[in-house]
Image (cartoon, rainbow, N blue to C red; front, side, top):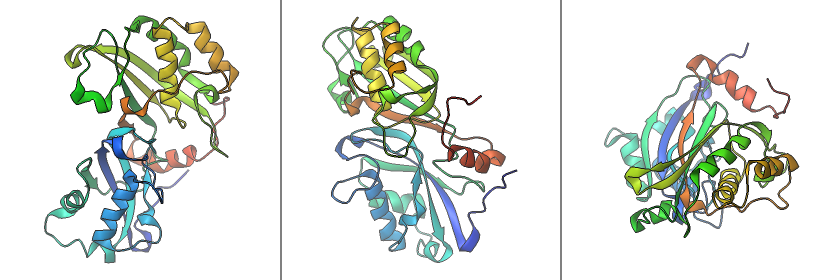
Length: 288
C-alpha cells in the first residue's frame, strides 16, 4: 500500500494555492522565457517575497491552460523551507502579500497546508471546464466578450446534446487533441452538459468533466459540437471522427476566450498519495 508522502521532509512545507485568472493577455499558464504567462507572474511575485528559487518552488499546477484560456478555480502547490517562511513576517499574511504583487487579472483566493501526499496535478481525479457560446439566439454582451465565443447564427442545442453523448467514456481522443511527445491521448470524459443560461442572456454553456484533458481537447470537442449545432455533423459523424484517432479532417479548434477551468477535484485525504501514483502511470483503453 502506498504511504502518504510527507512533504515536510528536509524542512520543506507544502502549500496549496487556489486561484483564478483572466487569461486573455497571457500566453497560457506555463512559464515561457519570451512570453507573459500566469505562472511567470506567480513566480515573480513569490521570488519578491521569498528570494530566488532554483527549482521554482517546486510549483506544480492541476491544469496547464492554453494561451487565452481562463480559470476561476485553478489549483497549484509550492514547497517552501522554514527559512523562506521567515521572510513572510506577520503583516498582511501570505495571501495578501502575494495578491499585492500580482496583476489585477490574477487573484489568489486561498493558501493552505494540504494533507500529506497532496500533489496539485497528480492527486487530482477530475477537472471541469466551461465553454460559453453566444449564438444567434443569445445576447451578445460586450462586457462578457473576453469570456464568450460569438457566432452569428443560431445553434441547435438539442443536436449538440445528441452529439456529445458519443464523446463520453474512456477513449483515445487523438482526433480531438494535438498530441505531445511521450504523452497519451487516452482520457475519460465523465459528462458533457449543454444548456442555455437564461440569466446570462440565453448563452449556451458547454461543461465538460473528465479525469484530465489533452492539449486543445476541449476546444476541439466544442468545434465538433458547434458543427452538430449547425447541422453539419450528426452523432454518427462525431463517433466516426473519434474512432479515426487522427487530427486529419477533424473539427475546428475554437477560440480560447470562451473557455474557463471552473473546478478541480481530489479524493479523500488518505487516498491523495495513491491517486498521485496511479496518475503517473501511462493510460490504457483496457482500464476497468
